[in-house]
Length: 221
Image 1 (cartoon, helix red, strand yellow):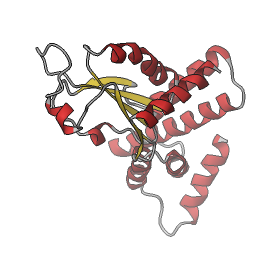
Image 2 (cartoon, helix red, strand yellow):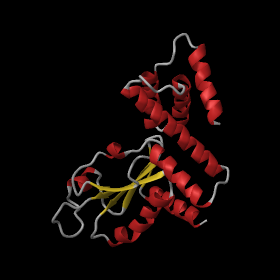
Image 3 (tube, one colour):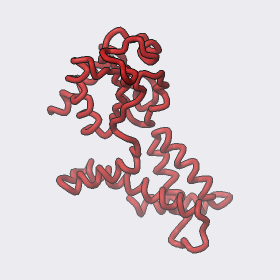
């Protein structure tokens, strides 16, 4: 596969009217990856490596950076392909971890807000499902449900969890009057919002809870 990708890059570089500008191509590659369009990122990575060849001496810092990133994207693609083809055991775990380090350089689980208003769009991850879990440490069902949602973020490569703590520091009991609770008109918790890989709201409330339960059942096999 790598040979074919290199060949594709060389062909494009030679047949075009002008040689490929590695820095510009790298910018397009990173933009595609940032939008979660990894197939497009792989395409531009192949073009970069085909144009770069094996000569690194005399290249600018920016060119070296994008050539390195191109190698990483194609490495991740090959690792994913190996796992899909049946790679098992420790090698499969290592391949998945290495691919995720490149394609999913975000925390799987994070806690935000602490009672203050929050813009959910700031925490969306391109190409990933993002579960927003509005909770309070004084909410019994929240505490019981949290480990289940954390398991999803840990075991599914396409799921990220953002826990939105609605309690302001020092407030005892569920802080229904906090800015974030008022911002989203919360009347019961845990309350879930799930955004899809496209950045659009996929489910909220009971529908989001059912979506989460379905994913958990899939993990049980």
